[in-house]
Image 1 (cartoon, rainbow, N blue to C red):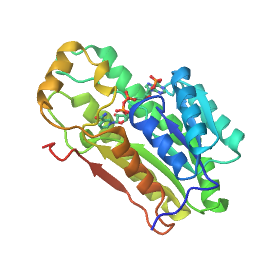
Image 2: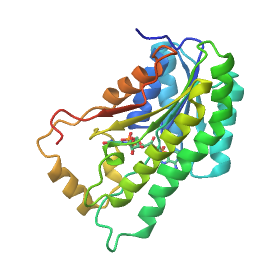
Image 3: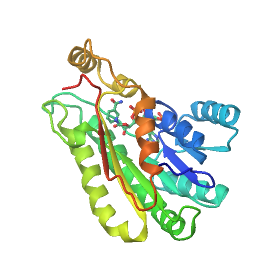
Image 4: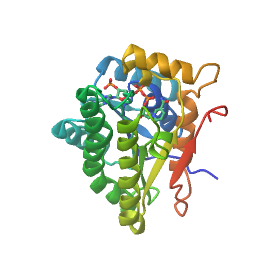
Length: 254
Ligand code: NDP
């Protein structure tokens, strides 16, 4: 049994590509009005156009770098002000820069920590007052904060130590916060994808990309829509049901 998202508002970070783009579209298909957050305005506007023509729903584009505290806060505030509420937040923007830790460019570690951890925390902090209000007085009397982690947030591997560290941090934050707000009907959930065909790997140095291609050679990766469906599943449960954690791997991923 799924609840419709009619009358609710969802904000998705990293909505300009991959999982965030597919999730925003799918939430709109379930009835949510959506706020789309990322740095590439043209891609957000393209998606807003698609949502408008396909679903007939109102989508708001918010150009923001969520690693900047004020931009993250402003994006959340603008979404809540424009739509008058905020019921669902998908904290999805992330970057994965792999390779050995020894002699790794420190700039890559900084980018991952700033986006995967600090940016996610900024968005969560700014969103929580709105989510708590929605859970108290919204159409569904429940609200959702979905944090996108990874298989890498469950299992550490040689070659992804810092990415592992950032995604384990997402898991720890999510569980602590879940316990804090559970009684107030804000559900804090973790979605942990395995390999999905998106732009994520393309930000790596060529030698790292070659290693990743070898690892996944001959394996069918998931599509962004597969994870969007998992996110929609989480946020359309009845008020009494909280799906705390969803680990989704490609069938062939070991
Ligand atoms: P993409 O690279 O396709 O998407 C990343 C999104 O994050 C883009 O929309 C990008 O938009 C946005 N983004 C990047 N930097 C910032 C920033 N500073 N401020 C705001 N938005 C930003 O990757 P995926 O869709 O694959 O990744 C989405 C999430 O899923 C990530 O958290 C990733 O770790 C996780 N994940 C992905 C897996 C995969 O195999 N693809 C596996 C496991 C987890 P823009 O550049 O326009 O700002």
